[in-house]
Image 1: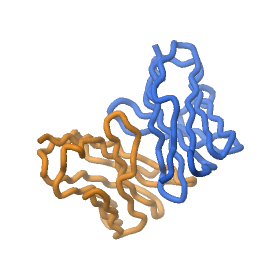
Image 2: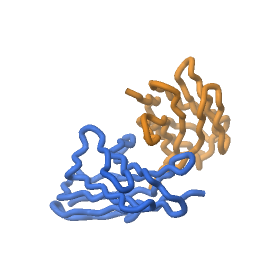
Image 3: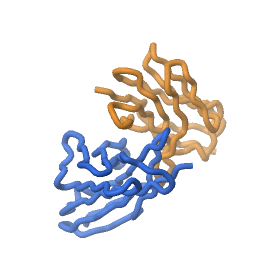
Length: 112
Length: 113
């Protein structure tokens, strides 16, 4: 079945450091790929998305490219801020009705 | 933008009682909503797909008699945890799609004591 694998956290960085969170997937067909972010005590918010191969999603300085050849959708940001501290979930659509399958989540902690 | 509202945000109940959680799409109609459960420091597990006007579709391993889902209108789905036990304590999140993408409720933290 479809699945998503994320790098294990937590990831701890200093402010202005470069961030990469790896995400690979297994899927039949052509799923859409998403990154969601969950700030402490809140629900999930869409961060960015890509709907077909080679698409690049970007938002708030974050970006990820849909790589069909490597089945990856790695999240990157050139310079993180303390306010980026959150849990990041990679996900894809699966099956009918746009069901979302999530990776395990990666906790990011950014220190001043 | 589209908003999904979930209520209550927190609930504490006694073991053996039932708890109802509401999920509303505030500015769009949702024929389908999804219910997820999130364990501490874990990912979201899809529990069921809620279909307006018909029975919910449950994922493998989810007890349909324990987690009752009702989707009586195009803007409201409810999840009732029946005869709750401490192991049902968790963070429950609903989501709904409009054209794109999925929007999530704020989540409900259920604690069964």
